[in-house]
Structure formats: C-alpha cells, structure tokens
Length: 164
Image (tube, rainbow, N blue to C red; front, side):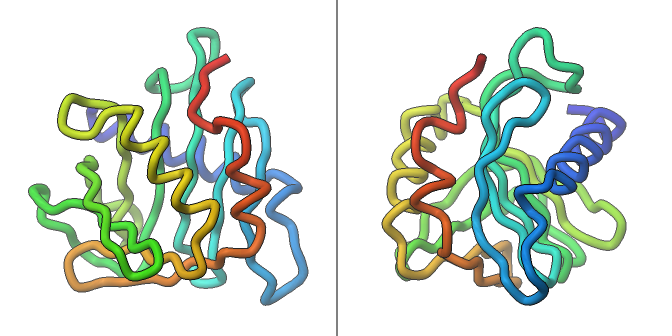
C-alpha cells in the first residue's frame, strides 16, 4: 500500500472515531460498535490516543482499500522496524500479527489485511478472544499500551470483519 493510500486510510479511521459511539464522558474509554462507510466496524480509542478498530469496506465504499482489516495507532511509538509485528496481549498471552507500519504525525500507525501468514480465520479467533478478555494490551517493539475491556463483548459481537 502506498504512503498516500495509507494516509487516506488513516483519515478514514479518524472519521470513524468521530462517530457519536466514541463520545463518552471524559476519562471513560470503552469499545464501541458502529457503521463506517457502509460496513460494520468495532473498536476502541484510549485517552492517550491509542486506537484499534476492526472493519470491512465493501466494493462500493470510498476507501483506499477493500475488504476486512484491522487499523490502529500508537501515539507514543516513534518508530517501528518494518519487520516487526504488532502484538496484541490478551490476558498476558501475546498474539503476533503481521501488519504494515507507517510513521504518521509523530506516531506509529498499522494495518492488517488477510494474507497467507495470518488469514481471516486467525483474526476472527483473536476477536473471539478479545470478547472475553480481562486485560488487553497493544505492543510494538518496546512500546506497550493498555486498552480498556469495557464494552468489548458487545462491540465485537457479530462479525466486524464481515463485508457488506
């Protein structure tokens, strides 16, 4: 994916996070389910600006790429080795996910799309594990951010990776 297309994808993510589902009381951060560009989406944002969303853009969506994907941002990470993986720690068990990294506005952004190394079935298994998690963290290299678990069961119910 080109840098320009990735920046467009991040703009779409920003738009998604402006959705009223994200508007909660100050200091209260939780998972939410919403519709974005005609497809189902679910995700979370923290007070520090870390973000993790799961969604799928169908063929008619005005998106730089199509299909199911995970998108996110780690504001405190300044740089990521392109060969590194995103780790999602679910109750202290790490799942390594191959993602494309890009430095964006002083942060590290990442995108996963299905590939032979980590297919759609494996990501759906991660989502299932996230629903019942008591603790969730994102980690890239030496940067780790804890995500809230509130609302994960409801937000991740159904299939946020199912394309319309």
